[in-house]
Amino acid sequence: MVSKHSVLLANEFHPETIKKLDEKFQTHHLWELSFDEKKRLIQELQGTCEAIATASWMVDEIIYELNSLKIISCFGVGVDGINFEVTRGRNIRVSNTPDVLNDAVADIAIALVLATTRNIVNADRFVREKKWPQGPLPFGMGLAGKTLGIVGCGRIGEEIASRALTFGLKIAYHNRSPKDLPYSYYSSIAHLAEASDILLCMLPGGEGTKNAINADILKKLGSTGIFINVGRGSSVDEVALAAALQKQHIFAAGLDVYADEPNVPEELLEQDNVVLLPHIGSATVETRKAMGQLVIDNLDAYFSGKPLLTEVG
Ligand code: DGY
Picture 1 (cartoon, protein in one colour):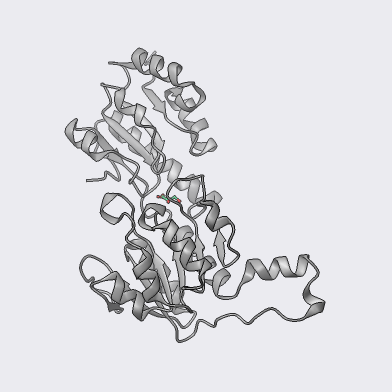
Picture 2: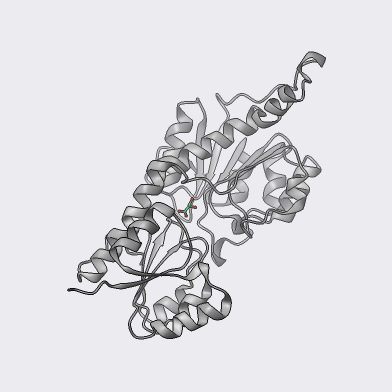
């Protein structure tokens, strides 16, 4: 009988995929253990376990104590949770799950654009609290003719842009360098913010983009401006954002991601001009299934000596 390859599962990123991994490999559930038990398990696996599967956005640093580690198969596209200093230094290969989630994340971005501009969440509360008979809600903001500025226009950003065009929005964007796109390019986030009615952040996170959206940028967006974040929470100075919302330096915000998930700053929870989602950009049945399959396919490719399907450089 051929023995199964050993795979350490760092967190319970998708129960359906975990089940498939449990069937296919000799798995070890790291997240179920106490700190001491984790340490003990990693010692037991030294030399025999080469593979880890983990959510890309919440990586337990303890995984790097596994000296025999050769591959981290990430569930998720944004790999800001990975310590590339360690992986590059030790030739540990990393794979992620790009493209299969573009539609789902683009959909949630548009949902936040509509929820903030049309005050959907407060409108729902207004009806439930039986306030409707007392008079109308303040009017929302129309989309046609307004400018949506996308900070970080990669593959997901392009999907957002094509959806936004159908609402009559004009598209502008900022990337490190211009792409071959029929949209207005801005070489700085500040200039893009000035030109935008809605500023949508799709930055990938990590040290390079930390607090890229700060008080200055929000001021440039202005008191009628809307800020949306579906990239990574670390790209936003959340204290500055909460202050801008509170002082109405911007009109509203819609967030799916936070700097310290699952913790959301109290200052944001207190504001009713911000829509808060629990990082559900890719959370559809279909998308999560496809992401899970890529995690498995990358592990299969690794164990059979084939090129990884979606290796991160
Ligand atoms: C990712 O894959 O990086 C997304 O943020 C998950 O929704």
